[in-house]
Image: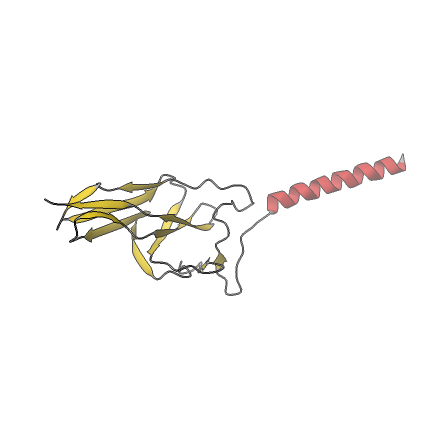
Length: 160
């Protein structure tokens, strides 16, 4: 009888510990300079699979040569904010982000972000189909987890 009580007590303790660990698990990692490592792009803070938002582009398919091409890029999930948008980034081992300035390692060229939307305006003097350079969006969700999403799009410049 004493053995049975001890076994039940041990099993209950282990169950409570496992449940507690799962609830308190936090997979965010930081480097020695306090920068968040970008290892959470596919996971939630507690290790579950993260559902990435849909990136939406509001822009015409084509624009006449000499006219300004304008595009607005935003996310379909209002719980996820766009903090910064970069282009022309270089690959970096162990990519990280400064949690105070939102500077992303390997990226230096920024696009304008206003009201959780990326604003792009450009003039092209070449007729034809063009591809915008890959954009790296730095996002933050309600749990303050920083992630990156990559996006590109094509557009046409036509004769007036």
